[in-house]
Image 1: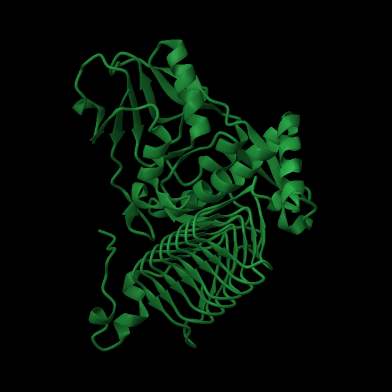
Image 2: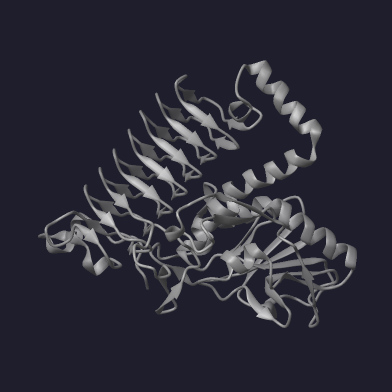
Length: 417
């Protein structure tokens, strides 16, 4: 089958790169798409519009390059589309909790059309056709959450609940979607899918139990659920619970606690670090007592001691100094909003951290308010005038520009324009 990729050149703040270049589960989105579709497609072409595609009668899959989907989702879409023998466009029910509750905020790619949401993913059995029919895919969300939260922290009668899609799909148009693709629609959804399978499959439960007994480990810490690459060093005092994925040449030090995480290659996580539901990109370094909760580090990042990141995204090559705190809960009873399309829009989230662009340097002791963005190539250090970051920080606000020859000290690698 031929695949045709529609380019989306819009840059996403604060990274100042198109979505296809941003990391999802420790690899660029374009590579994630290619790997997911590898067994279906034999030919690839990138275009700016469908009008560039030749009119030959060839089985064709068309998608926009800012879409996130995984193998389970695409398997169902292609299988059902082929079975229909008709030209199809992906669609979702208006009451699908995962789409309506998370995916439709801060974006325009998933839009309502009649009685459905539709997005830019098409299947054509005999080449491009002008008429397509919606093919409704159920994301099969699974309700999970942290229950019995105080009522002032939730609008759901004390229950903070997440509807995690077991067949995830997103249009990545904002940094919040990068967070969703990695966490709620990524590693968290993988865990939800595993729980769903375990409830249905007695054989799987017996296999997990046998593996745990054989290795003398609790089931969640056994090799059935914790996948470890080659040449890794894991201290025996570290606690790792799955589902978790650890790449090659990874060092995990004493007293590390790691739960339901995705760790890339050549990563060091040292003494006393705590990570939960987080993704750490290749070459990153957490020296000691750093904490990540539902956060994403892209490649070659460093988070120093006593820094706490909650529901945050950090761009590649960035440094977060010691003792930085990213707050994630609005103390006033207002929805958390973020800039999109030149205005503030609701994020659809009760709690949300911040976003740091690529090649950023943060000094020690900063406090960053929820949903704030720090532009790529910024240097920021705590001072009497700015210890609390209560608004977005652009490159023009960078502290290095106030220094002599500042432009030479820290080059701008990721301009907005």
